[in-house]
Length: 68
Image 1 (cartoon, rainbow, N blue to C red):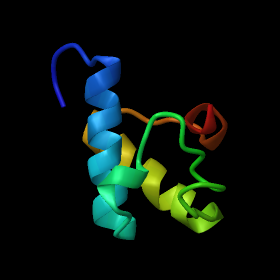
Image 2: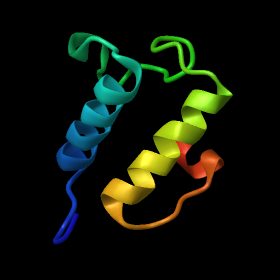
Image 3: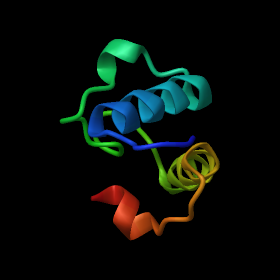
Image 4: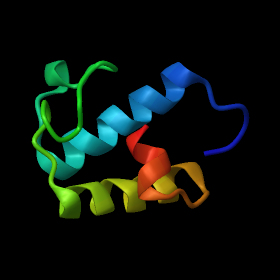
């Protein structure tokens, strides 16, 4: 992903990744949703999500930073 990344662009891309990885219905993915409590991710799912997000956005991030 190149150019300036907006908050909306990040949320849209993350939603796309979550739908593709976990088959989560798109309407469940809102900015207020908790990845663990609302979307049902576990620690392995979080690692998969981080790996795909890193690839999509072109940089590495820690699980702690991602969870915020």
